[in-house]
Image (cartoon, rainbow, N blue to C red; front, side):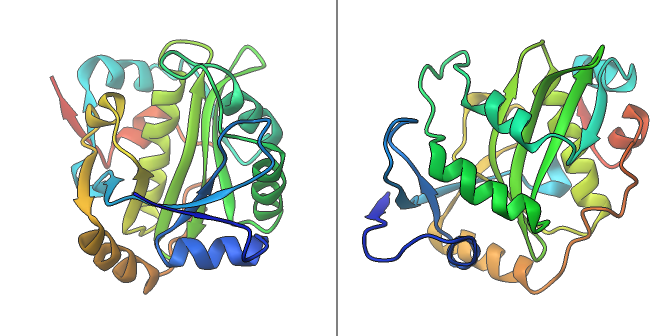
Length: 223
């Protein structure tokens, strides 16, 4: 995995978008570390949008509309949630510079959130960056079971409806594998990225509120 310091070039929102177009993204060592590093993994995680998998149990939860799913209503709440300790993740890499940079991209309409709400509380969600026909998933969190998974199902449905070509997950975890995530080589990733950047996905092809049944229509279900 290639790792370069940000000491040479000051990272701005415009630089960040150019970096994504080149296949690299920033991370920090910890929330207290003011520095950022450019990352370019040898093996890149993606979820093929035409092969997204949803278990029958999760599909029932999605169809039940147990969670109210919103988009782009609470960026600060989502990034706060993503910075919280989670099972298997005691520390966060989201520092103040990450918050500021992605907050500016959110204001520009280039960063998006998919949020799961229940009884007026934000209980899960995710955020990522949109560029052309690619969506770069950054982080997700949950405070109730299945909340982030439901947000992911809605994200994939929205991306497919909007004509997106690539969903980048950066790395592959056992959690993401259950949805069909896989690793591709750096060369293959750049080929997929180049193809995606030649199109323009419409994140708002769907209305802001979509039912669970609607979100599941473009997906494949497993037992």
